[in-house]
Length: 377
Ligand SMILES: [Cu+2]
Image (cartoon, rainbow, N blue to C red; front, side, top):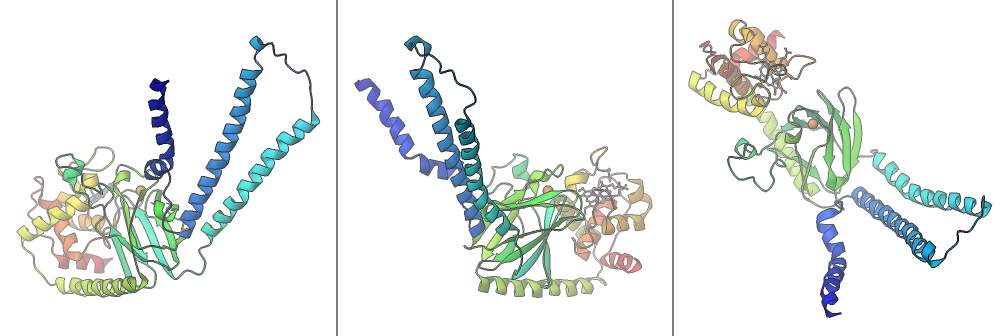
């Protein structure tokens, strides 16, 4: 007897702490919005209903198998077409399904109702980053992966938020209804933040609606949830939820900063940068914005992304080079960088491409040249 007690106590203690363990490791997040908590509640209710049905059905089945086995001399009852049984086994599942459909439908309807929002944010996916625009607020920015390439390549230890960190998080207020308009520049992406129970496809040419009202301030992380190409796993989402007062302060400050940056851009037009400055900044911009496709060595990936090293266009057509970087190439992964990069960054990255990897054209492209190319459009 004594031998069997220990495993039984172990099993019981495992079972007793199971709800805590399940919360920590296995279960869905409860999230920080009313909707996410409703979704969690639904998930638990339906899980319990399924578990009870499972236990009942298998319980009766095993009981019948064991107690009415042939070796005990059981004889099968011989009856057919019992109307009462048929009605019961149709009716009971029907009632159970209706009982589950009512709260599920209620939650779905609430999720879809983006009306009477306090703030609208346009979310645009593109290969491979997110762009956020606060409607009527004059604030917009790109949010890029911030994990260092050294971590991704395994040359240094992975950080705590490996592949779940960005340079500029989406800042949102708590306790306000936020409407999202979700779309895409290129292929289908999906904007997913589990803590809000928001997951919506970003489809080129369509605008999908979603909404949230965050109850607690904090940092919430998500990811693109639709396989969207080579760097699908490298376009995380970070939301920084702040109190409404803090949010208003942040918005005003960011608006002022962005306006200032635009004015400073104009002042740059007359500026002459040196080859060293341009090449140095250009390399940084290139690594951040271009190397994912064209590769750090400029050789691209044959069949998908053209080599810039030795490119005919770059070597023979400076205007064409500037044009393709500014406006992209419709229908290809080569997107427009006009709005993504500052004047100086554009000048630098184009100069870099014209002189790196043995391209050696000796050309300098100045911010003023970019501005001129823009005027010409
Ligand atoms: Cu994506």
